[in-house]
Length: 359
Ligand code: NAD
Ligand code: ZN
Ligand code: ZN
Image (cartoon, rainbow, N blue to C red):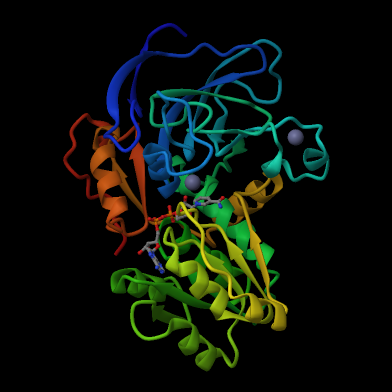
């Protein structure tokens, strides 16, 4: 498909994105071209823009790994999807399919995995390429804007909760109640868990209550782990740390009950001190979790298609991306901003579109 597209491009780390006109890419063999309808803005996009992590993307690149759109062109040999299908292009952009991890259906840790909006150009553009083997298939009852946050924030927290191995009736602590956390609370409730929401912002905690949290703790007031242990009779069976902030990590381990599991998904740059004696003597598991597999994707979308989980979205045009990043950096985004490429917010004005702002 010849023609030009608008894209928001990282040309230098820690600098505002540049708006550029790029050629619409042509799908090569085995690839598809997707016309973007909506793309969520994840805190990971901000880490990518800032070059926060040891593995840095090659400049220039287009971020965005919560893109939902319509397949508009197929490269040679593609039969898995057809033109007109609605797909999501996630963080796990592709994997090799045959290494020891792929063979165990742990494609998320494949050594040859490519990452959407990071090692491959992503959804902060009107079109993007994708690998049909790894796209998300969006259930028909789910709108594109509502689906966008699920293909990263949703899958990551759904998988992370499973990885805690907490069982119905047990306690889970969700640290960080933003884009990831507000969905984590909902998945955890649907999975029958008692939820303690932890954040440093009272507005986020009020929202957490409305989403069903049984207990909320402001990590800035007092000792959150002592408070949680007191309220739950020994701490949370599972802890999911989504906060992009290092102090939350030691706190999360401290919140974990004996024999419990603390799952790390937040990715602030740096390291945190592990209280070795407590972890050993209390037989605590600390484990990382990275997005989710294609099976996790189908499951997490199904919950939303059935109306059991719903992303709170604020629609904005692509042109607002630099302001959105500033707000994300300040912790000033209530849940998830979704870039809207179809509706009124798609107009090229940076004026905030106040549609669907969470109550
Ligand atoms: P976000 O900015 O939308 O939300 C972060 C929330 O954490 C905010 O509500 C903020 O108030 C809260 N917070 C900040 N400091 C805190 C503290 N000390 N204690 C408790 N809460 C605190 O970010 P997001 O999009 O939800 O992403 C969160 C993190 O998860 C980022 O680091 C991102 O890169 C990472 N992430 C990881 C994966 C994965 O696969 N492991 C996937 C997606 C995102
Ligand atoms: Zn993400
Ligand atoms: Zn592999």
